[in-house]
Image: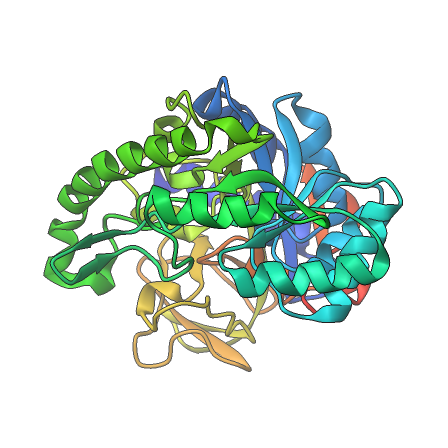
Length: 399
C-alpha cells in the first residue's frame, strides 16, 4: 500500500473511531465477509466447523453460520461454553478439549437429554469413565469424539504440539472398542488436527535460523500425517463415524483434499490476526483491530498511547506483542514494547499525528482480542453499524 493511500485509509479510520471511548475493539465486516468467501474456496468441498475460541462473540458466530451453507457446527473450547452456546440456540457443538469436571460434564448431559447435540472429546479411558459415571447417573447417552495426536516424532525429535497420547491406529481402535461397549456413550467422530502444519507460521522471527527448517519439516510431516490419518480412519471403518475433523486455517486447502476427512475447522482466518503475516500461504484480509489513543508526544518522532499491553499467549517472543497497523510507519520500541498503562511508538516517517488521535493495532492471535474487550464495534461500508458483546461482555468466566 502506497504511503498516500495508507494515510488516507488511516484518516478514515481515525475519524470513525474519534467519538469512541478508547481502548476499543473493532471488526471490519466487509473484510470479514471477504475472508468468509476465502475460507469457503479453500475448504471446498468439505464442510467447515467454526472454532469459537477465535471469535468469542455470539453475534459474529451467528453471522458466520448464516453466511455460508458449508459452515456447519461449532468447535468449542470448554464444556460450559458449549452449554451456554446451546442455550443461545446453537447446536452440533464439538467440545474439542477434554474435561474432568463433573458439573461441566453434567451440564452437557442435560443439554443432550433435551435433544441438543453436544460432543465431548476423550483421548484415554479416564476421560471416558468420568463421562460414563455422570451419564449413568443422569440416564442419558452422550456422543464422544476421540482426539488423535497428529504430531511427528523422529528419533526423539517432536514436531507438533502435546495433546493426545494416541498415535497409532491400534491404540485408537482399542479406545473406540471400549466406547462401543458402553451403554452411556457412543462414538460420534474423530478429531485429527495437524497443529504443526495448520498452526505454525514458517517465518516467525523468534525461530531464528531454525525457521529455514520449518517448510522442510512441514513437507516431511505432511506425508506422515496424511498416511496415518487414512490408516486410523480405515481402522474404524466399521464404526459409522458421523465426522472426521481435521485441518485449521493454515492448512485448509491441503486438508480438504483428503477423501477420509469429512470436515475442516476454521476460526482465526475470519479475523486474520498478525500471526498470519508470518505464513507463506496466501494471506487473508485483516478484519479485527483495537484502537488506542495518543496521549503524549515526548519527541517529534515518538508518540505514546494509553494502555495496550495485550500480549498473546504461547512462547514468549516479540512477535506476540500487538502489531501497529494504522498509520503505517509506526513501530513499537523494543525496550518498552506494549505496556500495561502506556505504549510508546516510533514514527518512521513524518506523520502529522496529534494528541487524541488513534493508533490501530492487530492482536497476534484472533480470539484473545475479545478476551480483553467487553464489546466489539462492527464497521461496514465505512460506518459503525452495531456494538455487540463479546464472551467477556456477557460475563462468561472463560471469555
